[in-house]
Length: 257
Image (cartoon, rainbow, N blue to C red; front, side):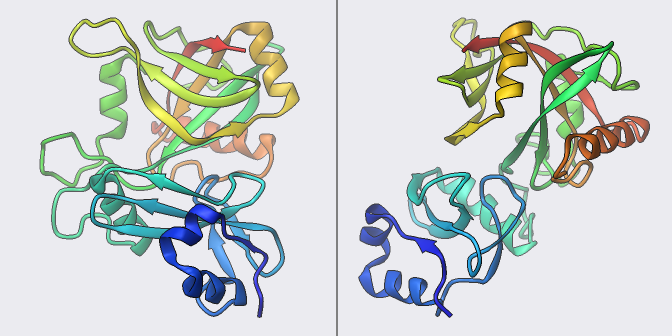
């Protein structure tokens, strides 16, 4: 069955006309998929879908995304990141060796705290994250963040403290990155998370961010939160993670508008 796929000229140039035509005809394209951007399910038979080609130094992986999330495009990534993504997709995160860099999933929403709505981002990796250079397989995501200044959450209804040197970059009303302090005392911030394509946020989220000039960032290990379709369900998932002792948070100044 033909798919509602968009194959950009850049992707077509990389994979070739024959493969692109097979995809559009539905021969090689999956009906259902997990969106490579928002991580929620999609269906290329019934909704507009983008083909996204991740290209490393030696490997290329074709993924699919909701067209409303990101357009069809070629994304250049490091070979290490790409191999880690392949292990995550196939369910073989460790591949008999140390886990590679996982993808950080980001969900935006408004959180009610002390009678006011605050813009929040919820960060959850797609795979366990080991301590760099450790060679181990233990998920160290939360300990690593606590070492950076994130604080364990016991009550989602309390404002987290501001994390010095970190910020959330919003440009032209879209989410671009979460920035952390640079290493070596350079003073220049570097990206802790960066969107392959700027992410849309709601008008209400953007208005709250411009009002408060700060964003609340919650983080939890893989499998703790999941993709929640409504903000009340997201709040419930955050509260459960907090009660389980698997949630950390920080407030970050807003950079941009």
